[in-house]
Image (cartoon, rainbow, N blue to C red):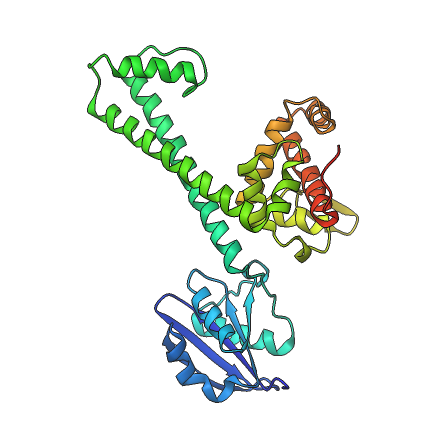
Length: 335
C-alpha cells in the first residue's frame, strides 16, 4: 500500500502531541492525546492504514511502539543523536518536524532491540548501578575509618587482608553506628551484585551461547564483560563495518576539518552506549598487565604518548576491531 500520510508523535509520559501530513506536506490534523494506544487510535484511525508513524525516542515511547507494531502499522523510532536541535523547540514543533522528515525521507531511524536484548540491557544496567553504589559505599567506609582514626593495612581497600583488619576493628565494639550501617549496606550490595551477575550470565548463555564464548576467546574479557558487550552490540549485522562500531562505542576521537586545517579532538564524553565503552576500557586495563600483542601495544602507546588513558583507548579501539571480526566470522580469536 502506497504511503499517503506521515504521522509524527512527540511522546511524553502523560501526553503525546501528534501531527499528520499528506504527501505534499500539508498538515491535516494536529493535537494532543493521552499517551495510550487507544486514545491515539481514536484521533488517528482514519489515517493509520496507508501511513508511516515516526516516534522520537524517549523513556515513554516503547509501549506505544510495541502496540503499533502488534497492529501491523509501519512505525519508526528516531535516533535523537542525529536530529538537529532547533532554536525554537516545543512538543508541537517536534511532532511537525518528525512528520516532515518522514515525508522527505530524512528520518534518522534508531535501532530498537528485541525483548531478549532489552531484558539483558536491563540486567546490565542494574548490575552496573549496584557496582557504582558499592564503590561509593566503599569510599564512605574508608572516610569513616579515617575520621575515627582507625589504622588499616597499606594494602588495597577491601582486599582479603584489608577486610580481615576491618572485621577485627568492627569486633572491637568501639565503633560508630554510621560505620556499622555502611558496612551492612556494603554486604547487602555485594550479595545483590553476585545475584545479578549469576542471573545476567545465565541469561546470556541461554540466548547467545556462541557469541558469549567467542567474546571470551579475546584476552581481557571474562563472563561479566562479555555480557556487557552482547547487550550493547547484538546483532553485529547492524554495523556495516568495524569503523561504525568504533564510533558507536565512542573510542575514536572527534575531529574538525576546514580547508587545509584539521583539528583532532578528544574522545567524546558522551557516546551512544557508555557502558559499552566502560567494558572496553576495563578489558584494556586487564590487557595492560599481560605480555600479549595487545599488552605490548599498550606499553608502546603509553611510552609514545606518555599518557596511560590514551593508550587504553587505543587498545579499546583495537578490541572493537577484534570483536567485530570474531562475531562476523564466528571464529574465536587466536592472537
